[in-house]
Image (tube, rainbow, N blue to C red; front, side):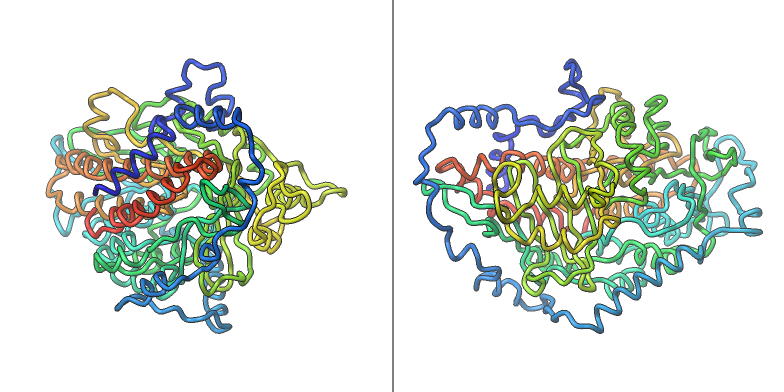
Length: 612
């Protein structure tokens, strides 16, 4: 753990306030969250930047070429790691696999559109949750014939896993999804080794189906690259596209006996859980839980839907996303703290017109909900394209001064990419015109230009970014501002400190509890761990009066681990703001890269655990 501690100190020295929510440390500033303040360099990093700009720039120090070793995707030591016993072996892309993955995604989307397995018609009218129970004061016994009943707000990954975990423990569950259709949204998602183990413990069939449907990404190299020529003879020279740090994602998983990370289309994940994880008729669409009433004294909860419909159960779980309405009610955040605001790196189900409309509204919601604007707006797309480095690279980040470009194998000869750009919140792209029918593509081609005069700052990017950008259509590219939350509770309320995500018969999980930046790819994975732990604790309940205690224990167990991961994701994103500074300072640049390389195995060992 010494290496991890040293790296953590380096991180903290660069951005000392990364663990503090922006809404806290700018509370007395005129430019607060309501105006979309962006992330800034400050503390030691800002001091170093100011000193550097005042120093004379010696051009010959930046002349020359980077090391040939940094241009090789798979040096010998990486090949040795990937050829360990029991490590997955890479099978080259081929037409049969591409057709199979794309066909399964298309079929899952069709099943979702046809509402297969959904609660509709006559079954909806006589659903078990519509009838209030005559539970005596003090509650009732929980038995196999009269099990605990659970309502779940939100039918995304967090809600599906939570429902499957509760169902596996014998509980009766119902999911309320606010979307008008249970349609696919966003691109494929990485289900990392820790999340796969959680799903395996919940439902072996769901695990097997996900592994069969997924594309392994741990069988190739992943890591950080420099986006454009950077550095100097004293700090190290790097050409565009040179490797800075390569990550070993399979070694830590094998050490713990965990399965290799896979990437799976979201509609496929949805349909696997709908078919194998929960009973038919569990999911009800067009059903947004607006508020709830704690019936008290072990008698459960009454959830009130937006249309006035009431649903009764012993437990309510809010898995309704970063702008959770259940969280708003749970923490008494007041009007405007929950809503339909747009967020999320994967894009979500909103179209461009709706996203444009909500961009400014999201700022107001974030301020009331105590969510932090990361400082980055994110363009995302799933490009139907066989990447030029697909056989050797599964995941990479091209780093730059004010932006970075992330890409990962999406399976089926598709690439999921994200372009994160530093700018204030609430920005929107121009609407298409005859002169510029593709405004998002136009901007991205300028931001990641690989020839001529380069980007607006004169940097000429590695061509790989534009390779993927140009493979996507304007309609496929979604834009969102990225928000997350404080890693630890920004409150002195004793009750919330004791039960961070729970009160009475109500609890929250997933993004509702701990929204995080996408840098570690752990948002959905931590939501999966939440679902497992929630099922485990509720599965021990033998009387409804024990529900508040079980939910409180669930949240206390989960909050520490998720806070650490949430903080690391925030810190990693904030650190990238100053990455260009690191690469030009003698001693500090090489030290930073070395510490990053040394710390990553320890971070991955922390992430990849079988205990949550």
